[in-house]
Picture 1 (cartoon, rainbow, N blue to C red):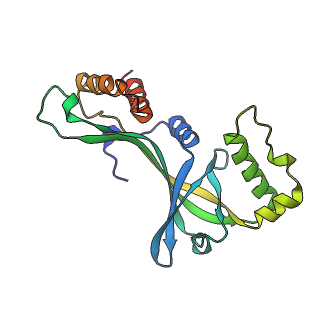
Picture 2: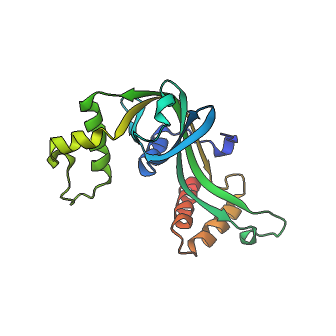
Length: 202
């Protein structure tokens, strides 16, 4: 990923926070000699420096992704930035965003306990605190049957690239104008980008 110095994210904890918050990723690999991508939730295991996830078994991407160098892209908030918000008309439009790229080698996981734990962690992350659903309460036979329809994997992370393009290449005054205009809208991602820009200026 192209990352000019002023857009580079170096704070590891902040990077992990974004991965946690925007866990629905795009996983790229080579399949039959062509680029291939699947959109799926991934769980980051900090102690192992690894990602866990699973394919639907009929998705043939898994068949040759093992032992490949794969790329997982986590896309954070993003929005259009209008030059009409600047103090001059001598400007062009742009886009602000946060994106994290994780590279690593994929291995297929066949250990039933590891597969169940990774699925359980995924469910626990996204179920609300007051939800009555718990994977541990589901009949083991049903879980085992459903598990036959997936292929679980682990990606040992070898490289992280993180970019937060938040108009840092513009003056503070211009950044404040952008924030003011983003906050005038009711678009959720605009508000998120405005909040990130504010935090960056602190």
